[in-house]
Length: 423
Image 1 (tube, rainbow, N blue to C red):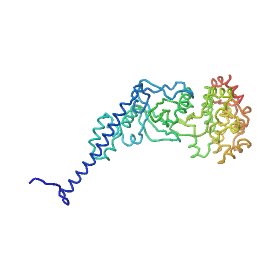
Image 2 (cartoon, helix red, strand yellow):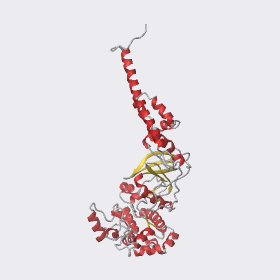
Image 3 (cartoon, rainbow, N blue to C red):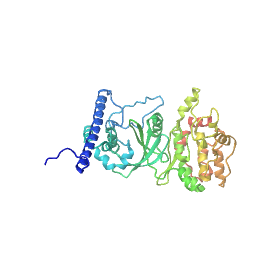
Image 4 (cartoon, rainbow, N blue to C red):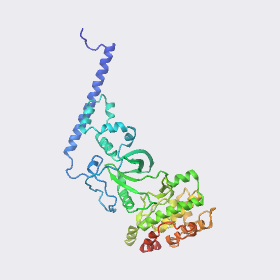
């Protein structure tokens, strides 16, 4: 006997209603995908035929911008590239990559049209939501070319840092993503790091640009930063402070010898690796000595920036400038904090902090006389009277182990040391 129309109230009627609901959802999904096809077709008509810049979809046709390129503040924000030797960065969406590795890999074998056909065949809109949009799928494929991405290990106001591993190796790296609005600042930092090569300065591996983000690959420091260490241990014995001080001074001296003022030396910007070696990181506040001198010659005030608890006394005054001497003040603050557990000048009120820095002396410490003498010379209010690198390296507190490379000091013996004295 042939089946008639669906009968309400029976099991057969319920099945027919469910089938009708699926068809209704299928039609909605088809409507959505048709609109997407129209949008894609429309976009293809308006594409600029000029060579494309690096973007999230064009990474196969992109080459990592050489880390040795010279970047100035007046440089154009549009930099064209040619071919790619492989993507050494992570791109969005990171949570999807981390949680659905197998699923993301499966999507790689589908082209844009395959994705559209699969969307047509999705049983419901909920099923369609599980499919990555073509742009995200392309990003996922390229992101996985050279690195595996793991958990987030740090973040800032405009950036996030992820742990990564180079494929087919046991080399771990740190992958830092920046918002595109920070492009000029990141380019300057990359340019500075590309000119630094020292065991006590965080190594730059490469950097890439996608449509929405900038991605910078650094060497990975498993130990974290000194600020975290201080939060756990409160303070350190003087012998350990001396050992850390040797690494910090060596890195800072190299930065100065290359013609840069660090501008933001503090425990949070000092990392250490699994071997216990300290490395300076985050050169976002660094400035070229040449740029500072040029601004002064033109009658312009160079920017004053940094972390107030570690800023030199002259930077709280009108007309104060960053210099090697202001970095050495920050060095004194860091050494003091490692031993004492707190910066020498500390207050929640900026006005009170300014008064302490300009008028007060650091609180006493239970340390050797050599340590007290060194920190006193580093924290002198006048930058002209502050200790300089030659005297710093030969100070008795180091016990004959002069920190840093003597060749870096020789570089400073010329006009750059004169800049320090004029500050």
